[in-house]
Length: 226
Image 1 (spheres, helix red, strand yellow):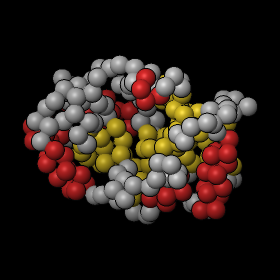
Image 2 (spheres, helix red, strand yellow; image 1 turned 90 degrees about the vertical axis):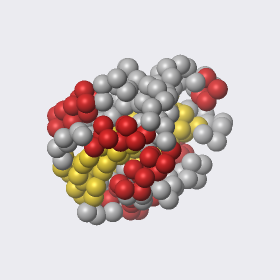
Image 3 (cartoon, one colour; image 1 turned 180 degrees about the horizontal axis):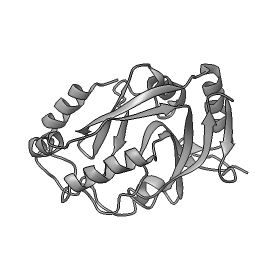
Image 4 (tube, helix red, strand yellow; image 1 turned 180 degrees about the vertical axis):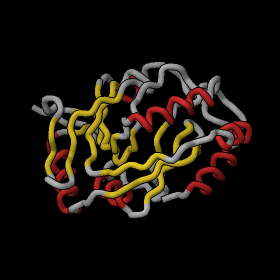
């Protein structure tokens, strides 16, 4: 995985942030309404507070309306489908493969630390530190043959999306001036989440949780494949 300094160096080298726009990216989803990911759910009071403070600190730089709850993306699933046809559809067979990989990994609870602000060209985020390789192991389990595992995978908690093309060095100084408070979190489950494809930065909803101790999935809403 890429470390904090590597990511910051790449951001500075990009020279400018990427401007995000609010529109329906139909050419991407082709009318498929729901997209799924595997993630660590960090929707807790301490993390919500850090996100809120970071948004205030970066006021004027971010696209309005970003409302996804705090999370760490572990694996990209695809477009939820009862009858998958395209390579980026995600159905029951793909889910069963992911669950088998998770069970074979026999994961144990592990602790992570959410630290300082960093940035990709498109979005600022909180960097994630871990003393074990728990996040990396989860990413390896859930990296599909379609989307692949990324050698430079960076565990992160997105704060928002940049609203304009901005000088990277100026943004980096603003990020460094943020007085963050480290958040410690014990990971003992991960979540299957979905979002509406027509909304950029729209609500992220948990469909189900996979528990390490029971090695079972617990549905929060009816499975989308029935």
